[in-house]
Image (cartoon, rainbow, N blue to C red; front, side):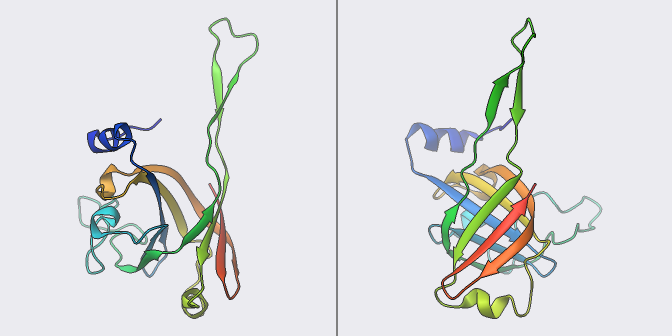
Length: 169
C-alpha cells in the first residue's frame, strides 16, 4: 500500500503529468534516470551529497551503496515495463477477500546513443545492482516520489543505441 505525501496528492489533483524516476544503486554509487533531466530536488541532492532515502543508520553506519555519491543522472529512460497490481477475488470467502499479485520482473531501457554506458560498463557492472522505480511529478522533492518497485538487476544487454536491464523483485 502506498502512502502519498500532501505534495504528491496536490500534484495528482492538478492532473500533472506523472514522472518515473529510476535509481540504480551499485557499490560505487547511484545513478538517477528519467524521461526528463532529473533535478536536484527530484533526486534528493546533488552529486556531492548522498540521496536522502533513509538508508543511513542512526549510529552512522552505512548500508551497502547507501550514502554513495550520485555518479550520473540524465534524461535517458526510453521505455519501461508497465506496473500494475492485480486484485483477484478469493473463491469461497464470505467476506469477499482479495489477493494481490506483485510484478516480479521489471525491464528498463535507457538511451546509450552517446555510448556513455558502453564506457561505463567497462569499469562498473550493473549486474546485481539495486533498481528502484519511483513515481512522482516533475518538481516534487525526492521524498514525495512513491517507491513503487524495488529489485535486483539480473541481466544487462547493451548495444550502440540502448542499455536494457532486467531486474527481479
